[in-house]
Image 1 (tube, helix red, strand yellow):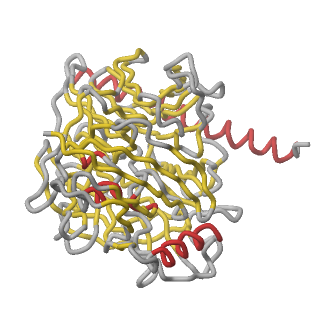
Image 2: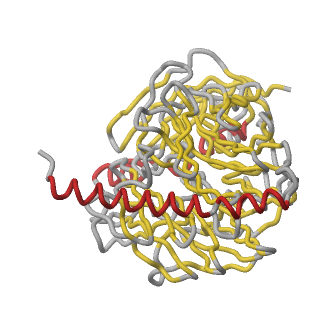
Image 3: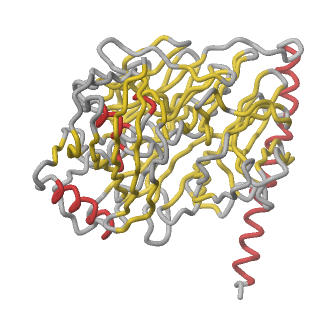
Length: 520
């Protein structure tokens, strides 16, 4: 039976929050109207497009943190340590980029690095950045093996760490940060797949009347939230009004505004297979993502044999819509891809690198110096500093099983271990040519997914597929680069080289892959 006092307190807190949030939105309408009148008729405006990501060097097997401005790459690191850029905020003429370098959270202001620490030699990760009134806020988590749980949601304000209050024994992560008026909102999740919300550092039961909120934003003088309704349909919330985007269940994940037009990206259960959300993660990887304009379906997010199944961030410049999201290529999950007007865009790589990877997109007109980014890709560079030979009492049993698996597997005759952590053994050695990272290959592949020692699923390759090497999971791509045509290798892929959204370090992918031919 519900505690009536606690229920009443929660209702009061929710009503108080909705009143303050809606009051802000109503008060901002006059300033928004003034802004639209100054811009003429609110017509689409060309703005700068910024993308955060990395470039990978297959020789060093390291990523260089990079951002692109209107397609031109700017390197943020020297390539000596594995690094990535994950989120961007624009404030006036200043460019702020959040990222991670070898297990250390950082941000850059106009290319100048600022390290984010709680303790010396600690491990932490950034997910999201915003700038408000000259203050820089970065959301992420901090790892402290002296505590249980040891992964703790946190944000940094001007480099100073602030631990977020949580309850229970789950690991917690702060993955999104935004400002509306004078309030700071943080969205995160825990290892029990519960969505978490904080307002000004205090944990909240909810943000507004949406059942689940993926992101919030203050755009063009209006307050927005995107997520799903109580009935499960994808929806967006604007100034206290909720608009459903689909008649079937789904989740809206990001929002952008251009002139008077509101663009929302997300996904729904269009294939009829059913779906579930675990935290803010949409779990059906076979659904095609959607883009809506002013509440009406604009486009499906698919291009030839590639489609985005969960959008992560979006930006609009004029009539061009840019979306970064988790992608599906053939039978494989690929790293996040950038799509422009329904077509995949491969951004130029920096000198010496093999390919580029994208995590996040934003426009210079997408904020009002108080907002923020949308979601970002949780990528393979997280948790990469954990040695495979370390035994720690703070690890859960499944994680320890995964560590033990790789430690024992490398001792077996015929198993080769690469510096990245990928292990493989040769079942059959072919005599043909070796592919390059940009080659198209025909492969036949089966996959077993494990969590520690437990087998979670098996996918048998029924027929060959043709795919670019750099569209495969990173671990499988690294394995293919070792193979000659005609080879069959068994690959043992750790979580950090596997599924791009995989944050569970206990997951292991065992993939038997046959390289049939390099397609010219």
